[in-house]
Amino acid sequence: MDDISFDDFLKVDIRVGRISRAEPYPEARKPAIKLWIDFGAEIGEKRSSAQITAHYDPASLVGKQVMAVVNFPPRQIGKFMSEVLVLGLPDDAGEIVLITPDQTVPLGGRMH
Image (cartoon, rainbow, N blue to C red; front, side, top):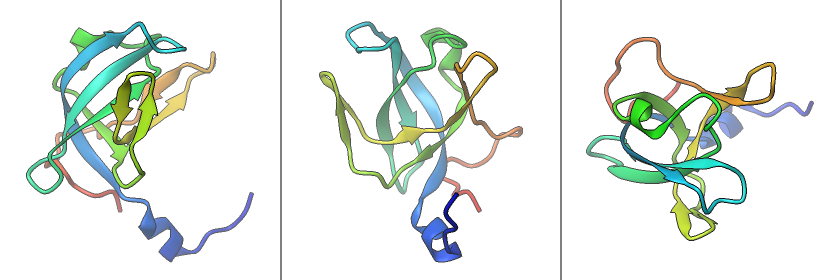
């Protein structure tokens, strides 16, 4: 594993947002859910596509706080433009579990 400097780490802008809308994305190559995430006044609402269908359904995601990288360039996922990268970790079967704060925190807060 390559070492990075602290300045390199600071370039990655990881923020907390709240999922305001979630829809199935059956057109995706792999099963996914389309997310609209509110990052507060500074950043606003951004979209993401996440392969999280093993543990989540769209209705259960609305209102959930999640962590996401907000300074990657947008990426076209099929017909959907993903603007942020939602963060998660694989479980024992390799299915993604979202990274979330364990307490409610202000939207747009940057990870330190």
